[in-house]
Image 1 (tube, rainbow, N blue to C red):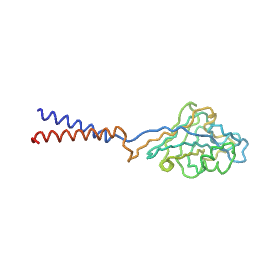
Image 2 (tube, rainbow, N blue to C red):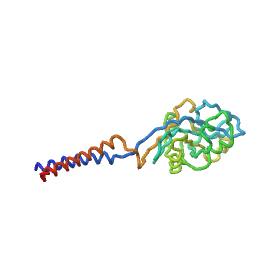
Image 3 (cartoon, rainbow, N blue to C red):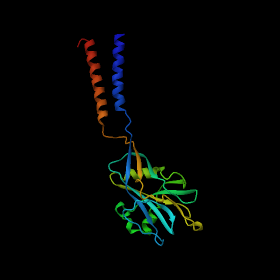
Image 4 (cartoon, rainbow, N blue to C red):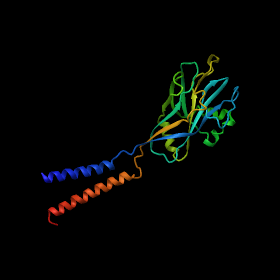
Length: 238
Protein backbone atom coordinates (compact mmCIF):
# COMPACT_ATOMS: atom_id res chain seq x y z
CA UNK A 1 0.00 0.00 0.00
CA UNK A 2 2.81 2.38 0.95
CA UNK A 3 4.57 1.65 -2.35
CA UNK A 4 1.38 2.33 -4.35
CA UNK A 5 0.92 5.61 -2.49
CA UNK A 6 4.43 6.75 -3.40
CA UNK A 7 3.89 5.74 -7.02
CA UNK A 8 0.67 7.77 -7.12
CA UNK A 9 2.46 10.85 -5.78
CA UNK A 10 5.24 10.39 -8.33
CA UNK A 11 2.75 10.06 -11.19
CA UNK A 12 1.00 13.22 -10.03
CA UNK A 13 4.28 15.16 -9.93
CA UNK A 14 5.30 13.96 -13.39
CA UNK A 15 1.83 14.60 -14.78
CA UNK A 16 1.90 18.13 -13.42
CA UNK A 17 5.28 18.76 -15.00
CA UNK A 18 4.20 17.37 -18.36
CA UNK A 19 1.02 19.40 -18.17
CA UNK A 20 3.12 22.53 -17.76
CA UNK A 21 5.21 21.48 -20.76
CA UNK A 22 2.14 20.85 -22.91
CA UNK A 23 0.25 23.98 -21.89
CA UNK A 24 -1.36 25.69 -24.86
CA UNK A 25 0.88 28.31 -26.40
CA UNK A 26 -2.04 30.27 -27.88
CA UNK A 27 -2.40 33.90 -26.85
CA UNK A 28 -4.84 36.66 -27.80
CA UNK A 29 -3.63 40.18 -28.53
CA UNK A 30 -5.66 43.34 -29.14
CA UNK A 31 -3.94 45.92 -31.32
CA UNK A 32 -5.37 49.43 -31.53
CA UNK A 33 -5.34 51.17 -34.90
CA UNK A 34 -2.43 53.57 -35.23
CA UNK A 35 -4.49 55.49 -37.78
CA UNK A 36 -7.86 55.27 -39.51
CA UNK A 37 -9.94 57.41 -41.83
CA UNK A 38 -11.31 57.77 -45.34
CA UNK A 39 -10.22 58.72 -48.84
CA UNK A 40 -12.46 60.12 -51.55
CA UNK A 41 -12.59 59.53 -55.28
CA UNK A 42 -11.82 62.52 -57.44
CA UNK A 43 -14.72 64.51 -58.86
CA UNK A 44 -16.94 64.45 -55.79
CA UNK A 45 -18.40 67.46 -54.02
CA UNK A 46 -16.78 66.99 -50.59
CA UNK A 47 -13.54 65.09 -51.11
CA UNK A 48 -11.12 67.10 -48.97
CA UNK A 49 -10.02 65.51 -45.70
CA UNK A 50 -7.72 66.30 -42.76
CA UNK A 51 -4.86 64.28 -41.25
CA UNK A 52 -6.35 64.54 -37.76
CA UNK A 53 -9.77 63.27 -38.83
CA UNK A 54 -10.36 59.71 -37.57
CA UNK A 55 -13.85 59.42 -39.11
CA UNK A 56 -14.03 56.15 -41.09
CA UNK A 57 -17.26 56.63 -43.02
CA UNK A 58 -17.46 54.63 -46.24
CA UNK A 59 -19.96 54.72 -49.11
CA UNK A 60 -21.66 57.46 -51.11
CA UNK A 61 -22.69 60.62 -49.27
CA UNK A 62 -23.18 64.26 -50.31
CA UNK A 63 -22.21 63.52 -53.87
CA UNK A 64 -18.89 61.92 -52.89
CA UNK A 65 -17.59 58.33 -53.06
CA UNK A 66 -15.62 57.39 -49.92
CA UNK A 67 -13.64 54.36 -48.78
CA UNK A 68 -12.05 53.83 -45.38
CA UNK A 69 -8.87 52.30 -44.01
CA UNK A 70 -7.43 51.02 -40.73
CA UNK A 71 -3.68 50.76 -40.09
CA UNK A 72 -2.10 48.68 -37.31
CA UNK A 73 1.45 48.44 -35.99
CA UNK A 74 1.84 44.67 -35.59
CA UNK A 75 5.05 44.82 -33.59
CA UNK A 76 6.60 41.36 -33.16
CA UNK A 77 3.32 39.43 -33.41
CA UNK A 78 3.73 36.27 -35.52
CA UNK A 79 2.16 32.84 -35.88
CA UNK A 80 -1.33 34.35 -36.23
CA UNK A 81 -4.18 31.87 -36.68
CA UNK A 82 -7.19 34.21 -36.57
CA UNK A 83 -7.91 37.94 -36.69
CA UNK A 84 -11.07 39.94 -36.09
CA UNK A 85 -11.56 43.60 -36.93
CA UNK A 86 -13.71 45.41 -34.37
CA UNK A 87 -15.23 48.81 -35.15
CA UNK A 88 -18.12 50.82 -33.73
CA UNK A 89 -21.36 50.94 -35.73
CA UNK A 90 -22.22 54.66 -35.48
CA UNK A 91 -24.71 55.70 -38.22
CA UNK A 92 -25.80 54.21 -41.54
CA UNK A 93 -27.92 55.25 -44.50
CA UNK A 94 -31.64 54.63 -45.01
CA UNK A 95 -31.03 51.36 -46.88
CA UNK A 96 -31.72 48.47 -44.47
CA UNK A 97 -28.50 46.64 -45.34
CA UNK A 98 -25.20 47.53 -46.95
CA UNK A 99 -22.62 45.07 -48.30
CA UNK A 100 -19.17 45.83 -46.90
CA UNK A 101 -15.93 44.39 -48.24
CA UNK A 102 -12.47 44.53 -46.71
CA UNK A 103 -9.35 44.47 -48.91
CA UNK A 104 -5.58 44.47 -48.81
CA UNK A 105 -3.84 47.85 -49.11
CA UNK A 106 -0.71 48.24 -51.22
CA UNK A 107 -0.37 51.97 -50.47
CA UNK A 108 2.35 52.37 -47.80
CA UNK A 109 1.14 53.27 -44.31
CA UNK A 110 3.10 56.54 -44.32
CA UNK A 111 1.22 57.57 -47.47
CA UNK A 112 -2.30 56.45 -46.62
CA UNK A 113 -2.07 58.34 -43.33
CA UNK A 114 -1.73 61.68 -45.20
CA UNK A 115 -5.49 62.06 -45.57
CA UNK A 116 -5.19 65.74 -46.41
CA UNK A 117 -4.14 64.61 -49.93
CA UNK A 118 -7.70 63.36 -50.53
CA UNK A 119 -9.29 63.12 -53.05
CA UNK A 120 -7.04 60.67 -54.85
CA UNK A 121 -8.32 58.04 -57.30
CA UNK A 122 -5.27 55.79 -56.93
CA UNK A 123 -5.61 55.43 -53.16
CA UNK A 124 -9.42 55.34 -53.31
CA UNK A 125 -9.25 52.44 -55.79
CA UNK A 126 -6.60 50.64 -53.72
CA UNK A 127 -8.85 50.61 -50.64
CA UNK A 128 -11.55 48.66 -52.46
CA UNK A 129 -9.66 46.26 -54.73
CA UNK A 130 -7.09 43.48 -54.67
CA UNK A 131 -7.26 40.61 -52.22
CA UNK A 132 -10.62 40.38 -50.48
CA UNK A 133 -10.36 39.89 -46.71
CA UNK A 134 -14.07 39.20 -46.28
CA UNK A 135 -17.49 40.44 -47.40
CA UNK A 136 -20.25 41.14 -44.91
CA UNK A 137 -23.89 42.27 -44.96
CA UNK A 138 -24.20 45.03 -42.37
CA UNK A 139 -27.53 46.40 -41.16
CA UNK A 140 -27.65 50.18 -41.10
CA UNK A 141 -29.91 50.48 -38.06
CA UNK A 142 -29.03 49.58 -34.50
CA UNK A 143 -27.30 50.96 -31.44
CA UNK A 144 -24.66 53.46 -32.64
CA UNK A 145 -22.45 52.33 -29.74
CA UNK A 146 -22.48 48.68 -30.79
CA UNK A 147 -19.09 47.16 -31.59
CA UNK A 148 -19.24 45.15 -34.80
CA UNK A 149 -16.86 42.22 -35.24
CA UNK A 150 -15.64 41.07 -38.65
CA UNK A 151 -13.71 37.79 -38.78
CA UNK A 152 -11.06 38.16 -41.49
CA UNK A 153 -10.33 35.29 -43.87
CA UNK A 154 -7.21 33.25 -44.61
CA UNK A 155 -5.84 35.82 -47.09
CA UNK A 156 -5.84 38.41 -44.31
CA UNK A 157 -4.19 35.97 -41.90
CA UNK A 158 -1.42 35.25 -44.40
CA UNK A 159 -0.80 38.96 -44.98
CA UNK A 160 -0.76 39.71 -41.25
CA UNK A 161 1.89 37.04 -40.73
CA UNK A 162 3.87 38.38 -43.69
CA UNK A 163 3.77 41.89 -42.15
CA UNK A 164 5.07 40.86 -38.72
CA UNK A 165 7.17 43.70 -37.32
CA UNK A 166 5.65 46.17 -39.78
CA UNK A 167 2.48 48.16 -40.40
CA UNK A 168 -0.60 46.38 -41.76
CA UNK A 169 -3.54 48.19 -43.38
CA UNK A 170 -7.10 47.14 -44.22
CA UNK A 171 -9.26 48.96 -46.77
CA UNK A 172 -13.05 49.07 -46.52
CA UNK A 173 -15.55 49.68 -49.32
CA UNK A 174 -19.27 49.37 -49.85
CA UNK A 175 -20.01 47.09 -52.78
CA UNK A 176 -22.63 47.46 -55.50
CA UNK A 177 -24.01 50.52 -57.29
CA UNK A 178 -23.74 53.12 -54.53
CA UNK A 179 -25.23 55.93 -56.60
CA UNK A 180 -28.33 54.00 -57.65
CA UNK A 181 -31.40 56.26 -57.82
CA UNK A 182 -29.27 59.16 -56.50
CA UNK A 183 -29.70 57.71 -53.01
CA UNK A 184 -27.02 57.97 -50.35
CA UNK A 185 -25.52 54.66 -49.18
CA UNK A 186 -23.01 54.64 -46.34
CA UNK A 187 -21.86 53.12 -43.05
CA UNK A 188 -20.01 54.52 -40.00
CA UNK A 189 -21.05 58.15 -40.35
CA UNK A 190 -20.26 60.47 -37.41
CA UNK A 191 -17.40 58.19 -36.33
CA UNK A 192 -14.82 60.95 -35.93
CA UNK A 193 -15.11 61.19 -32.14
CA UNK A 194 -15.32 57.49 -31.39
CA UNK A 195 -12.79 54.89 -30.29
CA UNK A 196 -10.15 53.64 -32.66
CA UNK A 197 -10.63 50.32 -34.43
CA UNK A 198 -9.15 47.19 -32.88
CA UNK A 199 -7.59 44.11 -34.40
CA UNK A 200 -8.07 41.08 -32.16
CA UNK A 201 -5.43 38.50 -33.02
CA UNK A 202 -5.00 34.92 -31.84
CA UNK A 203 -1.42 33.71 -31.91
CA UNK A 204 -0.72 29.96 -32.04
CA UNK A 205 2.94 29.91 -32.99
CA UNK A 206 3.92 26.24 -32.88
CA UNK A 207 7.60 26.93 -32.07
CA UNK A 208 7.62 29.61 -29.36
CA UNK A 209 10.54 30.49 -27.11
CA UNK A 210 9.94 28.60 -23.81
CA UNK A 211 8.04 30.70 -21.32
CA UNK A 212 8.97 30.70 -17.59
CA UNK A 213 6.16 28.26 -16.73
CA UNK A 214 7.39 25.91 -19.47
CA UNK A 215 10.88 25.98 -17.98
CA UNK A 216 9.29 25.26 -14.62
CA UNK A 217 7.60 22.23 -16.14
CA UNK A 218 10.96 20.95 -17.38
CA UNK A 219 12.40 21.39 -13.89
CA UNK A 220 9.53 19.50 -12.25
CA UNK A 221 9.93 16.57 -14.63
CA UNK A 222 13.70 16.48 -14.05
CA UNK A 223 13.27 16.53 -10.26
CA UNK A 224 10.69 13.76 -10.42
CA UNK A 225 13.01 11.69 -12.60
CA UNK A 226 15.90 12.18 -10.17
CA UNK A 227 13.73 11.15 -7.22
CA UNK A 228 12.58 7.97 -8.98
CA UNK A 229 16.18 7.08 -9.84
CA UNK A 230 17.29 7.62 -6.25
CA UNK A 231 14.50 5.43 -4.87
CA UNK A 232 15.39 2.68 -7.32
CA UNK A 233 19.05 2.81 -6.26
CA UNK A 234 18.04 2.64 -2.61
CA UNK A 235 15.89 -0.42 -3.24
CA UNK A 236 18.80 -2.13 -4.96
CA UNK A 237 21.20 -1.19 -2.17
CA UNK A 238 23.35 1.03 -4.42
